[in-house]
Image (cartoon, rainbow, N blue to C red; front, side):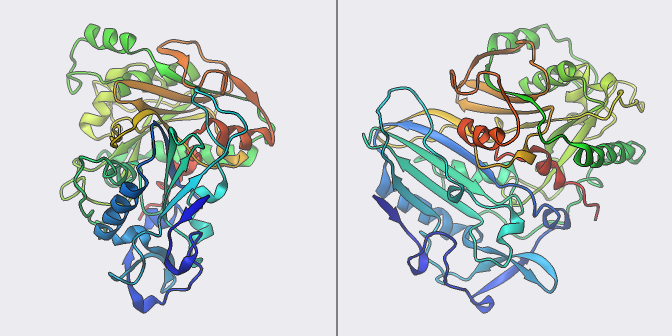
Amino acid sequence: MDERWCFGGCWKGCSRSLRNDAGRFEALNDHEIQSVRAASISSMTVYAGPCPERWLRTRVADIVRSNLWLIGRLKNNRGKVALWIPFEGAMDYRNCLEIKHIVRETDSDDIDFPELLPEFWVKPGVAIVDAEEHIFKIVALVEASKQRWHLLMSMSHVVADAHTFYMIHNMMDKAAAVCPMEVKRRHFSPISCLPGVPFHWKWFFWFLNQTRIALLRQKNQVLNIRMRYVNMDWVEEQKKNFAAEPDAPFISANDLLTSWFFRETKPACGVMMLNMRGRMEGLEDEHAGVYSTMLIFYPNEYQSPANIRRAIQRKSPACTLEGRQQWPGRGGKCGLVTSFHTFNRDLQFDGCTQQLHVPSGASGDEALQSPSAIIFRPSSDQLAMVTITEEELSSGPLGTDVLVGAIDARKLSGAEKKTAVSTVCLLNCKLFDTVHVLLHVS
């Protein structure tokens, strides 16, 4: 049994065409427009207990009523992609939520994922411009026993980065305040937002290598995909043994894991995503959109977690103690680490308990690029990492698999990748398309 709420009676895309005069256009920053091929940002959360269906409908409607841009559309406006936002009352506030009851052949107490259909996720921007397609979706998959359910949320990467995604996601909590986000864009350039112009040639090196990788990528490349818990004792011990340095008074779990992953995979350069809210004048948490940049590290830089911390503290690619330019490593391999764990929190609902939270979504073969990693928080007191690598990693700070038996070092090639990414719920999952947002220099 499906319960689908939508304007005009059709949940998928709302087939009824909406006139432009029923809303207004909000201009997007150039780097957001350039990200139209990026996959959506998505997640799945598993809950034990009955799904609070009535409460979900009410809360989603409240969130959308305060943030009408969530039921907006991507449309061309005078030759440029823009966010079209309906006027209040022009669209039903409930059209972003679907509650779907699923039936399994066998019941099990183990946490496993139902079939994740492409229709559950927001499509890449290129597929939804001028197409009356959603930029935001929430799906609740309720199991037959009604004692476990899965909350899926998806948002277009054209209008949101991980910060924006989780600001909306966290409003679902029963104790959270529902508040409007500022949708009017602040001018933002991912390159010029960072000081240190002499270091911008790092971007040029990264861009050339990304282009080369795209041209020479092997379709049948064998990759190791793992999703494992982080050993928090290892993290705490490393923090305890760290001696403060200039511009690095401490190191975080993110600094440690980023440095470790790059040391293990040895890319010519490693990229880490950085949220610029609170790091630029006039740019705060309430600003919706894509306000992320990337910090690029060469081997001599990513060897030390202190350099990761220094780059964040300085908001600059000049991350060594002396601030001198370094040289890229051999080969053309580029690595990426992106972090969600600082944004999300466990969502509390009456009568049910969160069991697991993972990055999720649909993907194609081209999404899997190596080496890549995602740091996320499966529950409030744990960290985990998704790693995509050519060679098996040493265990290091990583412990048991998040999903035992589901992604135990699967070596995949060809068409198997697409199924595996959906099955194990990796990031939505064009990792380097996430960074493609940053290619345009305004």
